Length: 160
Image 1 (cartoon, rainbow, N blue to C red):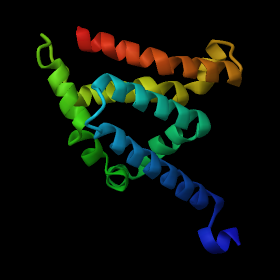
Image 2: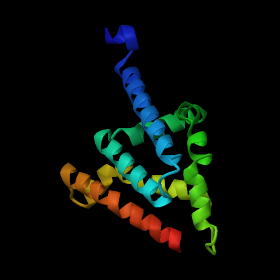
Image 3: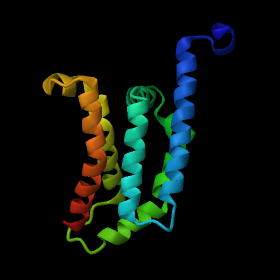
Image 4: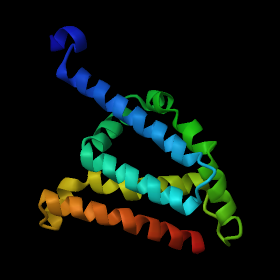
């Protein structure tokens, strides 16, 4: 039946991952465009939500990287990333918060850094676990700690 409906396990996996990512990006859009929350709170919510998603679905970063490599234009269109990020209240709040900084960080640079802080440890998980001699539970605990650390680092960047 699997082959009849989905052609292969890989196709089924792709469908599940795409649906998971679409749901995540839709929830991200709600957070990014909430006019009642501060930029700092948005960073906290995005960090918490993304780390929680990656703890539950650790294959997502590799899936995303594979999709980006194989279908770079399609992934942006599927998730409407440009609209979610570039035209969001979040983006405007970042510009406003950093307009008086001596060296203003462009919003896209900020987004790249934020996503990297969140995603890279999951991509490099095998190496991090080997270098730190960590078990999966210890790695997960470290990622939960990052939910508090990343917003602190972002606040420090915003003040510089």
